Image (tube, rainbow, N blue to C red; front, side, top):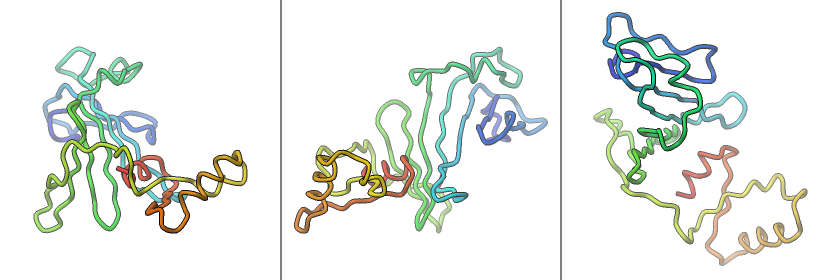
Length: 169
């Protein structure tokens, strides 16, 4: 990102300041904000990202006006990348979400599914069963019904909202 000439600012909350752009490379008009997806303590499952068009004057690096109080309507693109047995990249540019898989032979991301949506009725349900002892009895009863043999449902919990969302998707 820093050497593409497309960005004017790259930022992650994991860093105290914005990441430096490559010296001698043109300064672009896009702001990329990203953060790691954390699973078990200290283990990154991937990254989430958001892309915005700059608010600051063009021709120089971006500033705090490019980061602060940006709305979802201002996003140019957003998505997440999940690492594991395979690597997937899910991206939306406002016209549906598309899933790409990393082809290990070519090193390219290849379109795997386009215009994906959460199914109205699916077989995977994300439930954090570790908190069941502190929820209402009706919630416990629903989880018991979903787990019952023959329902065709699978309970799944990675401990990470985006990873769980991806599994349901």
